[in-house]
Image (cartoon, rainbow over the protein chains, first blue to last red):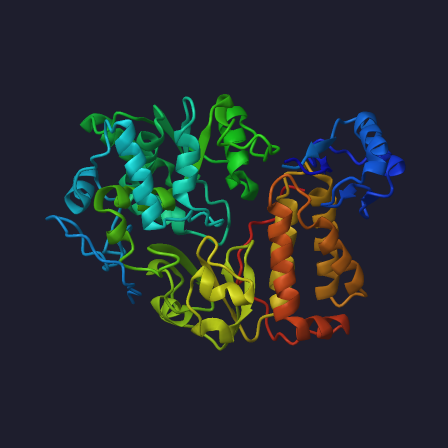
Length: 69
Length: 433
């Protein structure tokens, strides 16, 4: 039985370009230095398209969607 | 000192050391030089792990599990589980971590300097258990020569089927983090790498890699010889065995000692001839550890005993802070050092820790500082690195803000109650940035 999907940031790859937070402000906030904070919450079905877009658009390939087991 | 529990002892063969006698790992004579191979074998007997079949290897992992050995590098992970994860893998590698980059800690260096063969035995046992053909032992530069000599003694004696390679670690705090150590061995770069993959799945050269602290390996060498019941004759039921501790700060004789886990902290301090001044607080575990008030000294030095205070035994550091030295100033100094030691790979660690260190510094200097901002930054940075470096620093700061809460108030008003400054917690001179 699989659960939902969650956003994960690779903190080494992430350069703080902030595109993800523009596309998905509902789930991605920025810290005081401009790096994304993604919560430990499943991505709601209604935001899956935006989440996929945020992953696709990251210039550092630092964002991914993980299916929870 | 022995905190014995009710586990039955197995019958002892001739030559087995008395189970509840300490030290187990270090020579009885604290002034002894490196133990030679001959003296080592006379004390502990031969290692008989060579040429184990699969069944025997599995049995030994189970024995380590029954012993309840946990990692002595700080995280305290069950050793049997780490062994099992790599033992089922293809062509694994064993790495012994003796880098001990933390400036206040000396226990791994002392262990390597006095009992190098016990650590090398442990590396060999670990390699035999998981089916590795060789083990890489990475040590602090100050003990490299001693370990080299020990390794060549073994080669001349033809002791080991396992090849042992000795390396010097990077002289950096973060270089002791397991993935940073593997990165250092492979590419000469002492920075952590991303997870996944786990090292146990894909580590050195893409091979499943077991990284164990050198003290953990020394205990493993004794469990392989004398068994789980012997190991459990000291320590607590939940955290069996002995551990090395580094005792420093306001004590009469700063030193490294081997204690039964669960020994009351007060009693551990007496091994350093006791406090040299009235104490205010203790830093427990290490620089990623936890400040506790001096009144906690009656508690047992075990993770269960310290859990109520949010502390753990960590890597065995106990630093005693006297009444007249400011705990905030000491903490701010260490935090600056740790912020500078960030590998600089993750934004929240690189920028966040630097900002936090600056804010703490302003707080200690009585400059207008914003505690709300500081607390927000601690929340923002916690848990957001590729490794646990930022988390450890934040743990230290949070405990300081709690234990030195009244001092925080004083400093916010531009005052400090300390009457002298002292380097209780050592940090190297600031040269990198």
